[in-house]
Image (cartoon, rainbow, N blue to C red; front, side):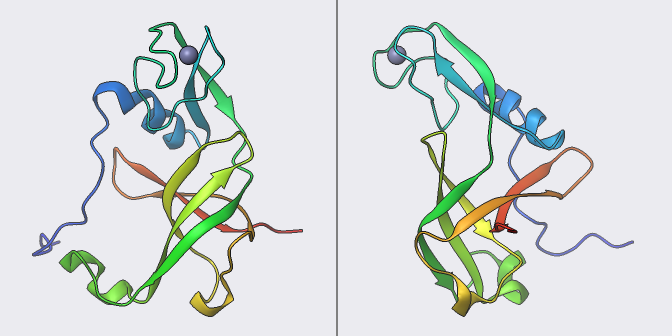
Length: 139
Ligand SMILES: [Zn+2]
């Protein structure tokens, strides 16, 4: 198999976000929560973004959420995405209270709306990386 001219851009499973990506690889969503004030922290960091405490504990959260906002992408910003357009780049607000950037899959671009209930989809993108996308929530 030949190497594609433009390999897919993927996150590195390292640093402060490594526990997040390892959980996603196991089809779970885990984020750090401040044990001092209770703030759920996204993107993953080793300190609280509200009170600056370094006492954080990772916990599993539900993937249930809603489309907070979205954009239909017609012009790829990276060559790997050129044959994927149009696709939906969205910010999903989870019921747990954080907003995640993501791709919305499993629906036509014209069917997406703000407030639409969504659920997580886990896509194995390489030997090391599983990506977190969302799709319309099934009833
Ligand atoms: Zn805090």
